[in-house]
Length: 198
Image: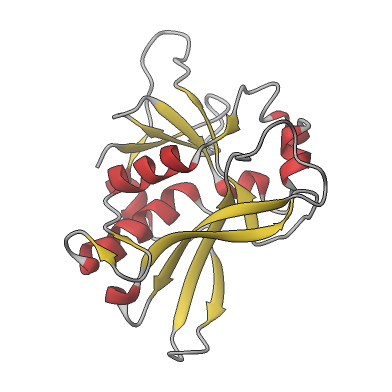
């Protein structure tokens, strides 16, 4: 896997960055923008789009992140090639990027973990507070791994704040002073054994 967990603020151990070494893109943890609306983030809340230089990721960039993480099932029918490995990859991505919310599954009676984040507005200009947004979701069914999948769906308006919805923010890799960037690999994050939740 080409994903490595790093710090947003060097030396703090905040683990708020996931670096995709294949694209050299740094992804902000979903936990950082939970309960902030699209317009809050766009307007500079938390300093992510201003001080730290992040921007909203496109659907294509998020899809590529999922592929590099090893996610193999998109939607209910498109599977390439092994749903079981898809489940493990999704667990690892959630460990790295946070954004997990636990829900009981009405249909199967099993617990599912859902993580969802807003993507870049596809229209022209800046959305209004009532403009409907889109979210990309990971549906992780713990008692039925083959059912786990990623997809995208309509979400609430751009002005809404929802604890379970964050923003997919990305930036080009920032090299720390000294030139060597150190961080935890996806494998290390997986063995840590703690789930990040909103």
